[in-house]
Amino acid sequence: MTWLDDIRWDDKGLVPVIAQEAASGDVVMFAWMNREALAETARKGEAVYYSRSRGKLWHKGEESGHIQKVHEIRLDCDNDVVLLKITQLGHEPGIACHTGRHSCFFQKLDDSQWVSTDPVLKDPGEIYK
Image 1 (cartoon, rainbow, N blue to C red):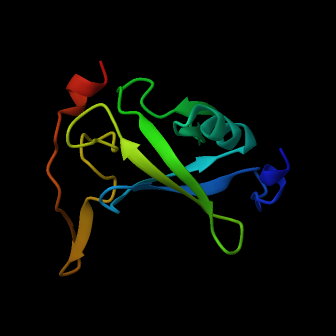
Image 2 (cartoon, rainbow, N blue to C red):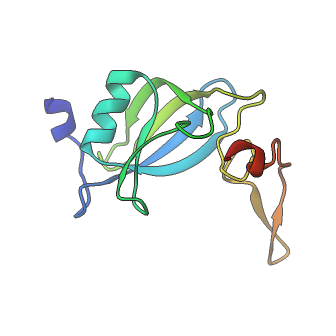
Image 3 (cartoon, rainbow, N blue to C red):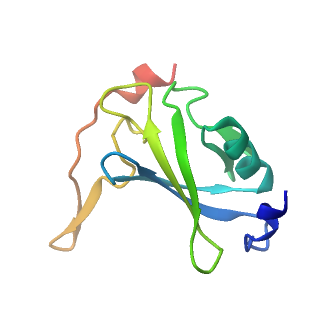
């Protein structure tokens, strides 16, 4: 897979990945991939990330059912950031965040304070049993 050799992996063999909803353009999450995760993502057509905290591959939705169907895999101009154009499945509207929100980017800086701007769509206690 020579296309994997074109990526500028960091010193830990990882590359940052942004997941963007294809339909809305919303950036729903940020994660990491290693070579195996990116190869699996391309093969499956579903997002597979590398969990740094667990030290293993993580098929998005394996516990929650909130799978990311991948439509496009893009690489930035420096070859060191991957962008996935995805459809978030498993709940309507899509839940990408482990907090039960649509996006992991639900906090907005407002007058020197972080304010939660997006509602919890489903209680995480119901998602992760």
